[in-house]
Length: 339
Image (cartoon, rainbow, N blue to C red; front, top):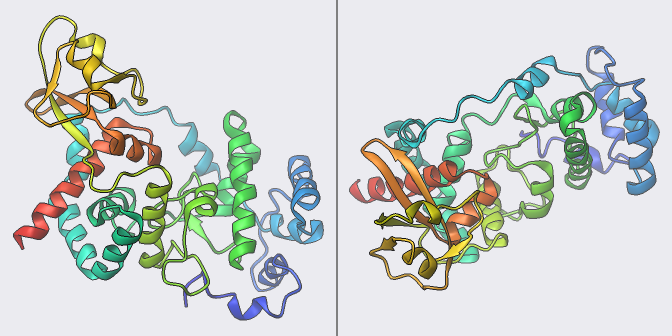
């Protein structure tokens, strides 16, 4: 029985959701009360009681079970690795094993993916590619209790404490809404959850009950995970039937002026043409695009990121991430057609 449904029978016997946490504590070995007497946690509990109707006593029992994880602080404080060039980044995600497993995942969930594509307009291969890049199709969804990760970062990581405090609030609210024990759900060291690695705020905003069982389970239910990724993309403006990128050729002395600073489109196709950028694809001259250069295995590559490319960057604000998702999606189509 999976974690999203384990408490369904209990819910009818409890007067409030966090009574489940108290019941859970009875059968667990005693843990270090890392946050039981924390002034920050007391303030947070008071806020949750005042603004969202959570019972203070029951939240106190929950936080008596929450553990501060030094490994999480070490991970998030670690200096960022040097950004890999595209020629080194691409081979991490576009691999024979990731493509083969993606084709298997597509076949296994073909009907669900077709329904998601019909309902939300997001191609099956893009949904599969997101799940493939994020968690290798559910093979690596994270091993930290989400409540530990978010509490550690909310109360012991000042640089981003407001963000993680908000996500902790969202997590407690989704646990109440879904009637699940918050001590059972696991995710990444930053609190990202399930096959698609949604943060709690994204879960509450975009996740859907795609199998209609009355609960949203992105941890162990690929049907809900597939529908939730499609929902996320549609809500962020995915254009059905439209491409993601266009290969550009460049010439002249003004090419560098066309490169976008950051991810947001700054120039349209016609403006880029005047700076020496061109494409063999038929593109609306007034379309804003993200113009970028990558260091590829065969030399510099120039690309135009179209509106759907920008949508992928809403999932992860990285040009190379969006390119990896798009090229994995294309590889999945090719491999599926070849078999």
